[in-house]
Length: 72
Ligand SMILES: [Zn+2]
Image (tube, rainbow, N blue to C red; front, side, top):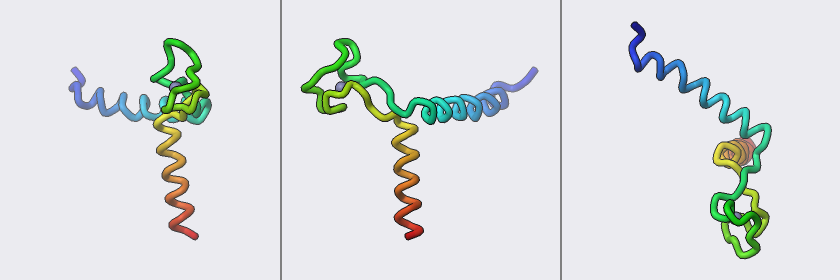
């Protein structure tokens, strides 16, 4: 029988890879705050667009900016 921790260690990189692939395919997700009612012009989280960048995409842009600033 395979220990649970080994199984988890195998699954986690696959899930992470899938998530980042999804982030690359569609970096813009729907806004959590105004999702039930669709677009909300007064929403401050997405500025009324109803779209928000995913957390993975935000991390990617942050890392890219950090790298660019560091190598300049
Ligand atoms: Zn919103």
